[in-house]
Image (cartoon, rainbow, N blue to C red; front, side):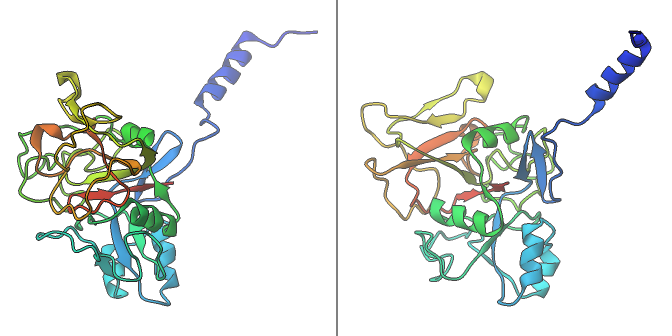
Length: 282
């Protein structure tokens, strides 16, 4: 039996190394690939789509809807972060805070619009599902946020992440607030729901300086004193006997407490806050 020439074997090795991994996939234009997961580029905006607009709903699910197309079809953004605070009925009577909807709404990843907030975990989970997606896991969120520059209190109000501003920025407009994967606004702007339920935290600490000094509220730590909430207009009081859920990244106004390591487990899934939104993945 003749042995294959060494040069030929080396060629096979080179081809094998150059081949894409088996899990490689192509994400829609509104998302970025983070390992095997497509993560939305932008914090979610939630839309009410007129009945019969099946083509537009399809574009949302394929990540190809634009603001112009939504406007032309008469779509209305729901829960666009309000200046004055949440009402508790920001998504209308057909999409209540408990998520038991009768008329669908859809999450979109679009640049240049206000992030939708005043949203419970139940609502966020459902509007992601209706768009053919889901909430990120905490691990996926952390991965997608890697490398996002954190200005802390040194927010320049124009290009940096919105961490020390009077109000949230429109999605994707802070040009210097992008992770190494291409996800926008993952530090500051609005807190973002992730998928997990946990034992609700009852105390907080801070990360060390290598992790930006970001706030960390996780697990049960006596004494059971609940720290201040993550933002304005908390409509639902916290109950440590209910499940806890996790919001990530901070909001537009809390300076050094914000960042990609900021984690806040002192909210129930029914929490409604002007400064809490979400993003989807698939």
